[in-house]
Every structure is written in C-alpha cells, then in structure tokens.
Length: 342
Image (cartoon, rainbow, N blue to C red; front, side):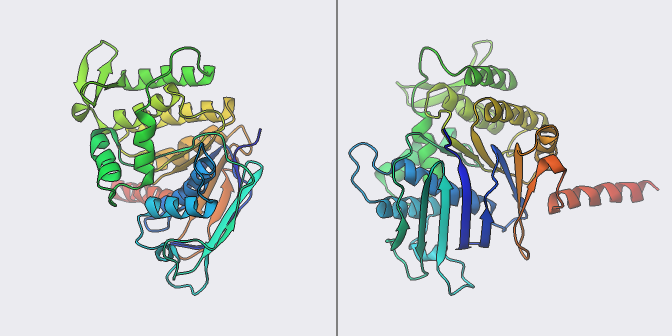
C-alpha cells in the first residue's frame, strides 16, 4: 500500500516562493543555508500529513478546513494564517500534495485570519501516525510542554513538540513487534549504551544504561535523548510502516559517528519497511553518509537543495554529491588548510 508523499507543490509559502517535486524517495534530505526554509518545508509537509491523519478520527466531526487551520496555526505559531504567506508576493499561498492514493490542498491570502477558504478534501483519513522530531530534545521539557499546551494553551512550543511528547508518553507494547523495528532498537541500545524509561509515579524520565544504572534525564546528554526518542516510538507502537517520519537537523547534539549509526538505522527501516523519512541538515557528514548509502541504489535518497536567490533543486544522491553551500564550505576549509601548510 502506497502511503508516502508522492508530489508536493508550494507557492508563496513563507521563505519558499515556489517548489514542485514529484519524485520523492524513501529517504529525503533537505539542505540549504540558514533562512532558506528547511524547517518551514518540513513543517508544511508534516502539517498536511497530520491533518489527513486527524481528519475523521474517532468522534471528531471537524471539517478538513478546520483541522488544517488549527494544525497550521499551532505548528507555525502565527497570530493569523496570512502571516505565513510570502511577504513580497501579492498572490495567495498555495499547498497541494499527493499523499498515498489521496490528495490534500489549500489556499489562502495574507488577509486570512483563522479560516481556510479553498481546500482539497481527502477522500478518507490516513489510518496511521506520522511524527516530527525537532532539533531540540523534548524529554527534559516534557512537563513544561504539556502544561504550556494543555493548561496555559499558549504559544511557545509548537505542534511538533506537543505531538511528540504525547507520542512518547505511550508505554512500550509487550509482545511481538516488527522485526526491523526490533533490530533497530537493538542498534539504538548499543549506540547509546542504554534506554530511556518513564516513571509513572513521579512523572519523570530517566536513563538506564546497559549496566542497570539509572540517571536523571537532566544528567543525560542531548544526543542520547534524541536517539532514545526514536527507540521509544519504535517500542510503543505509535509509528508503523505507513508512518512518515520528519527529523529536523538530525545531526544536532550528535557526534559524527552517532550520526552515521543513526542514518544506518534509518536506512534499515526505510529499505526493509518501505517507510518514508524527511530529514533536514547542515552537516557535511550527513550528506556524505547518505551519498554513500545511495551509491548502489538509484532512487533511494533524494536531496532537496533550497537556495535564497535561486529555485530549489532536486537531486538523486545515487548520481553523486550535489553542488551546495555545505560542501563549498568544506572545500574552502580544505583549500585554506593546504595554503596554510605551504
């Protein structure tokens, strides 16, 4: 069953004046300089995907327009929806996507407040859960995020954080799991030398290493917490083979060797479970590692390069490393080293 993002068209969406792509892969890497809209792009895709998953769920009778409007406002933390429209353009913001066998789309102007007028309504709800893992870990802020959203109902932590803390608070399931997920969890346990656990009595997270020693979550490195979140999602059944996983700045707080192991795990899941990932990065190590992963498999890794003064570029990493500012910076450092050594 095709459950992936197959096509996306954006017009006047924040920092992205125009984008169109219909050849996404199981692993999709988004790169670009600061201010080119990498996180904005991931959030745009996530908002639409989650809206399709929340639409008609259970006894929810909201229209898709209401679901989308609420998801966009709380994901992008805007006072009014019109603030998301590219400032330099008099035209409407437009989003259209083909996700699985269904379609979703919307359009609104800079004057839009809390309502979306033109909507392409999906024919059915996506019966799965996609997830967004932000650059900053959430476990240390777990109770703060929940209070901010559920009690105070105030901006500060957007829906990517709120959805994630709701997802990780589900307890691990007992019994059989997907073999690929189980294998990936073993890899995670080896990489971080342990596992995170939640104490229902105290309402706090802690880290237990492979020697059964416990540490408070505040005394645990951000990198360990970030990878542990993936382990928790694989264990508690929140994600399944139909889920789409978005990871913002995957290299954040991780040593390059841990980044490579994390990407190996993602490749294992994407290949064996036929799942789709969208990853943003500033790191040369991430691009290089994914290029190596893509070397023997055409169409496995798509690289989306966003630019400030040029149209976005879409590139199959099977064809080699694309021209981009991250690689250019690495080359300049290498050339400077050569010059200094002469």
